Structure formats: C-alpha cells, structure tokens
Image 1 (cartoon, rainbow, N blue to C red):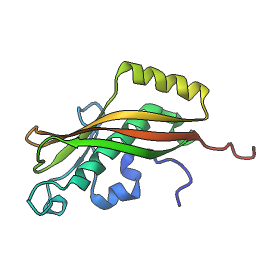
Image 2: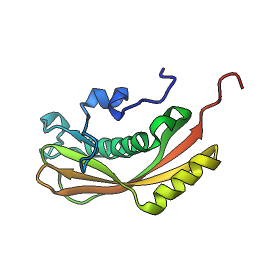
Image 3: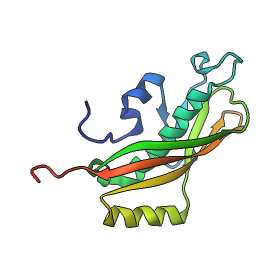
Length: 150
C-alpha cells in the first residue's frame, strides 16, 4: 500500500493499468487514453467507464499540479462524480479540469485553514475529432496527513 501521495497522476496503479497518459504541462488537456478497441463498448464507441476514468484522472491531475509540494501533506479521495454524456466518443479521448477563479481562491483559503474538507472540480472529456463527449464534476474529500510523531 502506498504511504505517500503520487507525484504524477500516471503514478496511480489503476491509471497505469488502463494506459492513461499524462499530457505535457501547458496543454489544453491534462490526460488522455489512446485510440484502442480495448476501450470500446458493444457499439464500437469509447465505453462510458473509460470516459469516467479520464474525467476522474483529469481532476486528480489538476489537484496534483496545483498543490505542488503540498500534495504529500494530504490524503485525497473521490467522494462523488456527476456526469452527463453529451455525444459518442471515438478514438483517442482527452480530459481536463475546468476550474474558475473563485474555486481556486477557496482552495487556497482551505489549504491554509482547514484539516478536512470537500472540494469540487468541473471536468470535461473530448475525443480526437473535437467532440465534447462528457461534462461533469468530481467532488474530492481532502484531509491532512497526520504529522509523524505527533
């Protein structure tokens, strides 16, 4: 069992298992799954579960990239996801978190003052043709790790 938070979203064992790829910093999208029939459903389009995995990983990647060196101080787990599938996804899919200024400010305040809290990020998934296939939100439960020896 892992004792510290991963540094990158692709360090998460499940993400390695499914072949999730982290996109380089500065790009529009955070993570992707390659075009591969292993991710397709019975209709030959990208399975809902594959899209959910990309959406969740995109939100986790946002947290890791924005917590910086503080990431190891926290335990973060998904509490809830709400999504809407907008249209079929085909081929490679990409995910990103959509986070406004107010949410960023609240996160900064919570990091400075709270031990435990919930935090919600917007998420979107697109396919390689640019189709917007999923929109939703991921609610995270965050708590500070106990200080060693305390």
